[in-house]
Length: 383
Image (cartoon, rainbow, N blue to C red; front, side, top):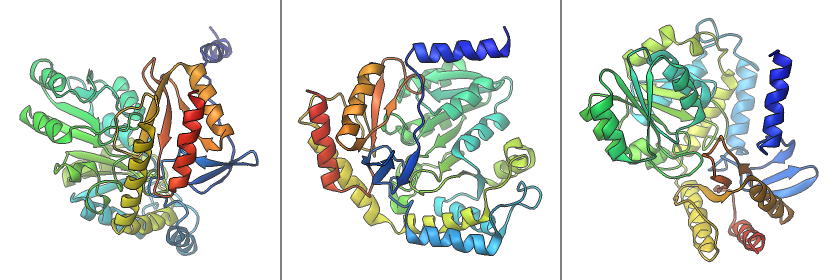
């Protein structure tokens, strides 16, 4: 079959199975509000949990970085792309999170892929929670290691694989807060089981960093563990983009010497790292933002109790309503949009078959009246 025929076949299947992905052109985004096609919506689909995207300190820091170092880095970090701004941010992150080293990546997807690409070899074992992010699963499936997927947050199932199926080097993978369900991993139990069987633990804390723990240090700090490798994202609570890997000196040097993701990718712009330092400062001083976010989460959860919606149990900013049917979910999303609330539909394969959902996200930028409008819209959509 030619590439053209193959492409057309896949596109036809995607349309026929009602899995077609849509991309919307955003005219304006203030985290709390969206403007799409000249219409304003209250935004309940943003991962900018602390509402820092529009913060003047971050914007002005980016401008200052542009003035001092220009618009781009000019090469990979192995050539001339690694500036003093990059080095400062890495040091600040390592100190903040209690690791000897931090390494910057252009995205969370890239950081997670880099870990698996470099570490997982033949005869190794990857033991991953079934609901980890696609970036990790994709890399694990392509690696030479044997992949085992334990039932979501079920410690007994993890222990079964560790004890009976995995002889040799073992890498256990989980998330701090899961991106689609919004629930938290039992990190202390996972850490203890992993170490008992001499394994390594990788935690992707994209949705926990900045949001929970003292100074927003995230899920691992909150649970008083230090995984062998921690990946964090700057596209959620930091309000920007990019990612970092936290680890010890030897692991960092190993990545620095051998990771193709680092060697052959152009560094993020120095101005971006300068802005990220400002964002880090705001996160460290942002107890009031985390308090406001938690107030909004609790206010929504209290209000939704009086409805019949099937809400996944979650204490995080991610609140998912399981619909099940793609067409029905799209209809409900359209009803919410007509009421002025923007909520995206998440379909398989991003989530398991039969769990198509409305993925609601709350932020510190929301007001109680925004949530009241959402709750009323959800009530009307259920009638």
